[in-house]
Image (cartoon, rainbow, N blue to C red; front, top):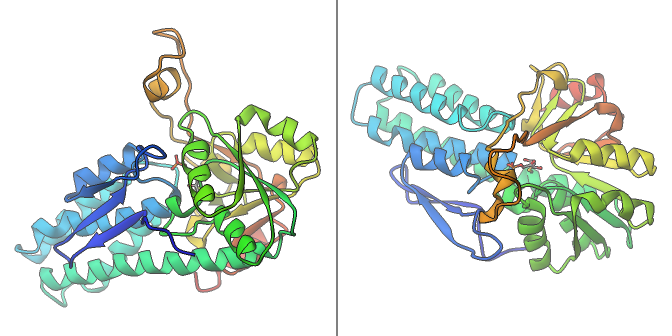
Amino acid sequence: MSTDWQTLRWIGGPAGHLMLLDQTRLPVACQEVACQDVESLREAIVSLRVRGAPAIGIAAAYGIVLGLQTAVGGDEPAFFARLEQVCQRLLSSRPTAVNLAWAVDRMRLRAGSLRGQCPPTELHAALWAEARAIHEEDRQICRAIGGHGATLLRDGMGVLTHCNAGGLATSEYGTALAVIYAAHAEGKHLRVFADETRPLLQGARLTAWELQQHGIDTTVICDSAAAHVMRAGLVQAVITGADRIAANGDTANKIGTYGLAQLARAHRCPFYVAAPCSTFDLDAPTGAAIPIECRDAREVTHGFGLQTAPEGIRVYNPAFDVTPAELITAFITQHGIVTPVDAPHIAALLTREC
Ligand code: MRU
C-alpha cells in the first residue's frame, strides 16, 4: 500500500530541512510546509500541522537536528548547551503524547554516548542518522502493529475509530488504522465508522480522508452518534490509538475516547488500543500521572472560523482523556496482542527489545 503523500520527509543531509504535510489544511488542500529551524517546527507541532503521538516524536527528533544546525561550527560545550535548549523548546510544545519526550530522550542519549569522542559536525551527523532511524523504525513498527491487529478482525465487521491514528499520525500506515489497512489487504471487508472528533475534527478531516483514499468503506458519524450506532449492532470492535499508556494500562487518547470505551463496555463490544512501545510510560504508575493538554477556547467557540458560542463564554477544552485499563480489551503493539491489560503484562511487554 502506498500513497502519493508523506506525513514527514527530510530533504538533504544533516544541513537539510523537514517537509510536513500541513494537516490543518486537510481535507481541502494537500499541501506541505517547510520547517527550516526549530521554532518553525515547534509552531507546526503546537498548531497541529503535524500531530499524532508517533509523528510528533519523529518531528521532534528532526527538530533537534534543525536546532543544532547553528551549533556545528562551535565547540562541544556550546553544542551540548544548545542541545539542551532545543530539547526544552520541543518538550514544551505538547505535554500529553509521551512519544515526543521518548524521542527527545533517545536523541539526548545518542549525543551523550558520543560526548568527548568527535567534533560537533560528526555529533550532528550522528543525530541526523538517529532521527532517520526513529523515522524508519516507525514504518516497520506500524506494519507489525497492523499485522498483529488484523488477526482480531473478521470479514464483514463494523469497526469504530476515534480521532486519527493513521498514516497521518505516524511515519505511514498508522496504528489503529494500520490494523484496518492490514485486514483490508487480507481481503476482509470492513465497514469503518469514523467519529468526527470534536473540536478539531481529526476523524472527519483526516481519518475519513485517509480511509477513502485506500478504498475502505467509511462512514463519518458525529461523536454523539456512537451510542446509537453501537446499539444498532453496526459495530463489532472499537480501535483507537494512544498518546500515553501508564504502567497499569490506563490510556490517554483524544478527548472522547473514555466515553467510547464506556459505550463499548455497555454494548459488549471489544475495545482495542493500538500503540507502539514508545507510547508506554512506566514513570506514570496510573493515568492520574498523565498530563492532559488543555487547548485554546477558540477551538471550541470559533472552530474553523465560524463562531458557534457566545463571545466571552467560559470554555473547558481538554484535548485528551484517560480510559481506565479495565475498559480496554487488549493493546495491539509491534510485539503482538497484550491481554489482559494490567501492570504485569505491560511490564513483560516492555522488558522485550522495544
Ligand atoms: O491532538 P492530536 O490530533 O495529536 O491527537 C491524536 C490522538 O489522540 C491519536 O489518537 C494518538 O496520538 C495516537 S496516533 C497513532
